[in-house]
Length: 366
Image (cartoon, rainbow, N blue to C red; front, side, top):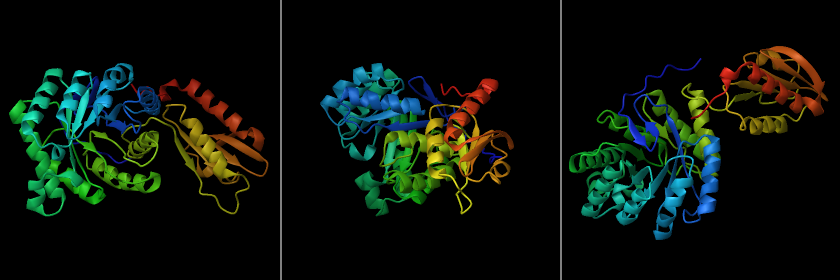
C-alpha cells in the first residue's frame, strides 16, 4: 500500500507535445552535460535519457555555437528540448526560433528588462514554454539587499515578482516555476510558500545536491516531502553523475510514493551470516537487467533458500540462493530448483513468461 496523495490543482501548460500540470502525470526531466555544440554527443546522450524514461531534456546554450546546433538537435531529439539561458537574451531568441519547446530563464542573471521582454514576446509568438527558474545562488541584488541572505522568503518574492511581470507585461501564461536551493529544507519551504500564492505548475528539485549518494539523499528528502504534500508537477533529480542516473532515481522516488511506475521494483535482503551465495553480484545483475524492461513488477533477490520465498512472498517472481543451488519462486511458492550457474538465466526466462501471461503489466511510457 502507498500513501494517498492529493495533488495540488495547477494549470496545465505545454512543453511541445508534453503536458505539465493539471491532470498530467508528474513528468521526469534531466539535463545533458555534453557540449551542446557537439551535436552527435548531445543527441547520443538525449537518446540514452529517452530510453531511460526521460520526458523533457534541458541543454545549455552558453554561446553562438550552441545556439546554431539547436535546430538540428530539436529536429532529431525524441523528446522536447528546453534551452537553458543566462545573461544573453539574444541566444534565447535564437533558441525559440530554432524550435525549442521551452526555455529556462534565471531572472537574476538578466539585467536588461527591455531585452527580456522582447524574448518573452517571442516565446508567446512561438508558444514556447517558459520556466522561471529561481536559484538561491543568483537572486536579484535588490532582493538580497532586502533579505540579507538567500532565504526561502527571498526566493518566493523573486518568483512571484517575475510571474507577475510575465503575466502582466506580456500576457503570457505558458509558464512553470522552480525555486531551488542547495539546502533541501529551504527548498521545501520555498515551494510550500509559493504554492499557496500561485497555481502555476512547479518544477521541483534541489540544486547543487552533490554526487550519486549524497545527491540522491538530498533530492529524495525534498522531492518526497513536497510530493507527499501534493506539490510538484515535474521534477529533476540533479546529480553530479551520469544524467541517466537522475532519471532512474526520479522514477524510484515516484514509484515508492505510488505516483508512477516505469521499472520493476527489485527487493533484496541485506545479507547475513546465512548467505552462501554472491548476493551482491546477483542483485546487481538483476537490477541491470530490469532496466531493459518497463513493467509494473515486483521482483525479489534473496540470499537464503530457507527464508527467501516466505519473506518475499509479495513479489511476483523471486530467486533465493544457496550453496551451489538456488530456487525460483512465484508469489511465495517455489516453482523451480536450479544449479547456481543457471539461476539468473532461468529467472529471466520466468520473468519473460510472466509478462507474456500478464501483458497488462507492461508500461508504455508515452
